[in-house]
Length: 406
Ligand code: FDA
Image (tube, rainbow, N blue to C red; front, side):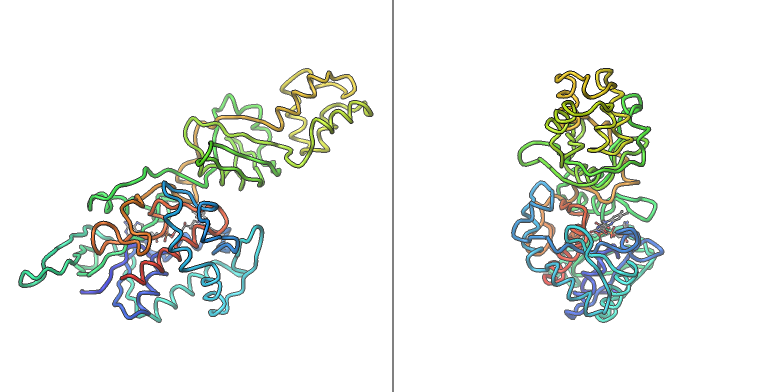
C-alpha cells in the first residue's frame, strides 16, 4: 500500500492528526497495535475525559507544561487553542460541563469524544488498521530509477506500506496493560534523535514502610493542602486536595507535584494552608481547656489531628497546659511538613510519562524531527501538561500543527 502519511498510534494525538490531515486531502493510514481504539481517552477523567482546559494560556505555556524546554509548545498551543477544540466538540453536539479550575468534561462519557474523532477520520477518508503491529520502519532516500524522493517503508503485520511521511503518536509508557510501549522512543533512537529520560508523572508518591507506618492509618483521608517541591525554575507549587494512601500520598496535589519531583528530593506540605495556626493555637491556649487534638480538629480533619499529636508527648495534653514552645512546634510542623518520598507508584498508576523525544531535535512549528519526513506528536514528546485537560490539549495542538505541515 502507498500513502502520503502513515501515523502510528490511534490515541488522542494520532486520531486527531489523521482526521485533520485526511480532510486536507492527504491519503492517510492510521496504524495501532491494540484491539480497541483510544483506550486512554476511554478511561480518562474517570470515564468522562477532561478533554481541555479553559485556563490554558498559550502565551505562557510554562505555567501549565513541563519539559526541558517549556516554551517549545507555545507555537502549537497558540495555533490550536482550547476554544478551537471546544468549537469542534460543539459542532458534534457533544454536551460538556466545566468542573474545577477550567477543566472541561464530557457530560455523558468519553466515548462521545472517541466517536467524534472517528467521524472526523471518516470525513477525511482515513484508513485505519487495527490491530496491526509495526515491525520495522526504513527510510529510503532513493525512489525508483534512483530519483531522490525520501520515503519510508513500514513492515507491518498487514503488509508493507510506503509513505512519504511517518508520524509517531504512540504516547508514553503509562498504563502498559492497555497498550503503552516504548515504540516511539525506539524509533527516535533508530533515527539518531535524542531522548530526555522518561519517568512516571501525575503519579502517587510512596514512602519507606517503617517511616510511613504512623500515617498508614490515615489511608482514605483527604484534605486541602499547599504542596511544593524543587527550587527556582524547577519549582512546583499547588493548592489542591491531598489523599493519604496505605503506601504514601496521592490526590490532585500529589499527582501535580509528582511531575516536578525528582529522586531524593523532599516535598513540603502545609496541612492547614487556610488557617493562621500560631494565632489560633495561642487564642485556644488563653481560652480553652480542651485537648490540643480537639482544638486542632477545628483546623484539620479529626483523624489527622488525633494521629498528628501522637508524634510528641507535649502535644497530648490540654491546650492551656501546653508550653508556647510545644504549640509553636506543632504549628511549625503542620505548616512545614517536609518529607522525602522513596519513589512513585510507577507506570502502572501514572497518568502520563514525563520526558520523551528531546524537543531540541523537533521543530516547534511542525513537529518534524531532524530526520526529514519523520514527525512526533502527543505524549511521546518531552512535553508534559498539568493534571486538568492540559495533556489532551497538547495532543490536539501538536497533532494539528503536524497535520498542517505534512
Ligand atoms: P495515547 O496513549 O492516547 O495513544 C497512543 C496509542 O499508540 C495507543 O492507542 C497505543 O495502543 C498505540 N501504540 C503504542 N505502542 C504502539 C506500537 N508499538 N505500535 C502501534 N501502536 C502503538 N489527560 C487529560 O488531558 N485529561 C484527562 O482527563 C486525562 N485522564 C487520564 C487518565 C488516565 C488513567 C491516564 C492513564 C491518562 C490520562 N490523561 C488525561 C493523559 C492522556 O490520556 C494522554 O496524555 C493522552 O492520551 C496522550 O495522547 P497520545 O495520543 O500521545 O497517546
